[in-house]
Length: 197
Image (cartoon, rainbow, N blue to C red; front, side):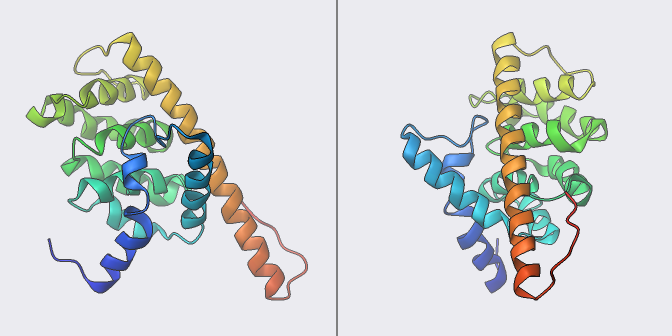
């Protein structure tokens, strides 16, 4: 795949620093708690200036690294601005990105995405040793759809834990974006403003 200069900048800023810690469902993965906090702060900072077009590009990219980070960064934006891109990512979802994509879908995409998720589980690479088929099936069940197979209760519990991680991450992204917006307004000289979520 050929990347434009802008694409390469986006990958350097939003993908390379994070994807190895974020590709698993339980992301961010760090044994060292201080390193985990530093990594999370960097991730939140990177999400402050994101646009829905950038997240869409990441999600619809053919690279699993880009899709992984597109899924997590989708949490930084209002759901209605990224919901369609999250659903469309399932058309060509990589098995490496399917875990984060399933978690984010379970949080922001709604039941409309179920039809796109079901074929992933049936795909040959959907049933790999990454355990993504079970995670995607758990997400389908969470969204009220019929999963292609019943996921193991341990996988369901892991998926629920991952939803909590994603919810916390979404909250942190929103707080950081609101703070950045307030700072921008303050610098531009406005004294009164209303900030939405």
